[in-house]
Image (tube, rainbow, N blue to C red; front, side, top):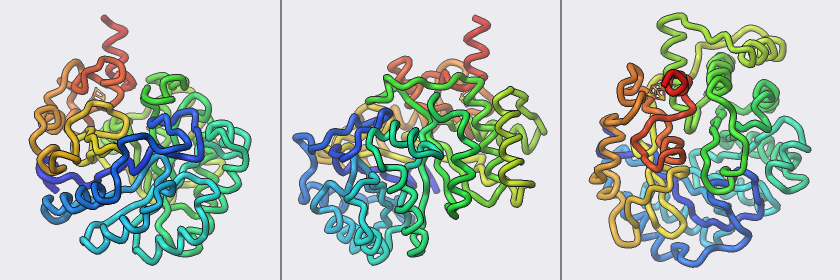
Length: 367
Ligand code: SF4
């Protein structure tokens, strides 16, 4: 696909309302919708405008907040289906996520449902999600969806709280039968500002661990850690190994829990970046390069999404990798490019270097 013309995914924050209050929530979601939320008519107009992209058209991911808080959710999912637009759903796990929801998901042929799991044990997961009983409900929801043949993706946000537990989280989701694990890394935005991040060395350990874990027939993708593609390239082509203590410990646990690898690595060495293959539409129609990058590009209430995506000079520079600092000269920039969201959160410039990358931090230490 030509990411200059068409993204592969459009994330739509259908609402900021949510029954949970997770400590890392990028949207700082609240229990009620915010003023200015797109109404049904505006949402349908936005969905229609997606048809301006050429085939294969992007998949529209209904996210939030909790999309289940929108009364017109299934009407809009059905509308998108009738317009020939593929959809995905990212609900919060609460009493709103019932078996009826999964039946509707089947009926509407929604391509995937993502469910968050941030810890392998109830007390930590519930502490992060700030609602007791969420862990048990989450495991039940995943099992139910899988039993119905729904394509389930588990999402995990990595932070200080759960960094050392990545092998246990992987073991749990693998045991349940999940085939796709999307691992998000923290960006200082929303309530995530107050959550402790891991160090660049720990990012490197996590990425190397994920590379190993992807050799057990589970598709693993990262969000806001595109330098995993550098790790994958360096390991596959140069045989370079990271020797960080955390990684060595995680690798030992992985071998203990899962045994010898069963497949080749599923880590892709090409992929998307905020504004390069993906685009994000906020609850009020505002458009951003990604959900963790609050750099406003326009509004779908007044403009067409295709025009905003294609004509933004900032997005063109991200796509062309006209980046600053070490990311701008790095040999891996075409396959990686660094997290544009994290660069922005540290420097207020979406083209700056990603400070979580071990290469960027090494240069910063030298200077
Ligand atoms: S320096 Fe930037 S482009 Fe290079 S691997 Fe690190 S984050 Fe990616």
